[in-house]
Image (tube, rainbow, N blue to C red):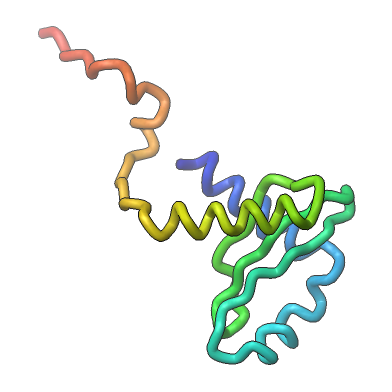
Length: 108
């Protein structure tokens, strides 16, 4: 869980530094009432996406860079499919390392 939160934070930081983000709020105002998916080419030449709600607030994005804009779009479409059928699973951060191992009983 800590790794996931760290990756999301890193992604948000990269998106803020990526070129083309200066018009983000203006773009959100143009599409009032709708969320937006921004496709950005970052400094490393990779394409990433950023998802914003109707008010322009960042709600998610890609941590992975894609070689082409087409690949980034395909990743967004795959994400849409997964989210449409995904189930919520609650986990504690200490469970992630040893999920497959049975929990050991404490001996007295």
